[in-house]
Length: 124
Image (cartoon, one colour):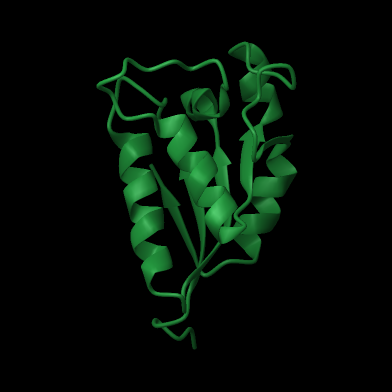
C-alpha cells in the first residue's frame, strides 16, 4: 500500500509558458509539493506546447512573471529533472541551441520510465 504522506510524482506539462495558466499552475503545484520534503518529484516532463517552457529566448515584459527562469530556479534549488520531449521540441523550433539551462531533451521513453516508477502522474 502506498503511504500518502510520502509520494513520488511525475508532472507532465503540456501548456506553453505564456498564453494559458497550466504551466504556471504546474509550477505552483511543484512548489507546494516540495514544501513537504517527504514528497518527491522524480521528473517534470514538458510535452506538446509545454516544450516552450524550455526556450531560453523567451523574453517576457518587465512587469510579467518569468516562468522559464522560475522553472530553472526550482530545478536548481531542488535538483529536479526538467525533461523536454525532443520530437515535440523539434516541431516547435526548440533545440539544443536555444534550450534553457536545467532543461534536457529526451524521448518518450524517459516519460514512460518515470510514469512506471512513480506513485502519481499529474498532467497540466
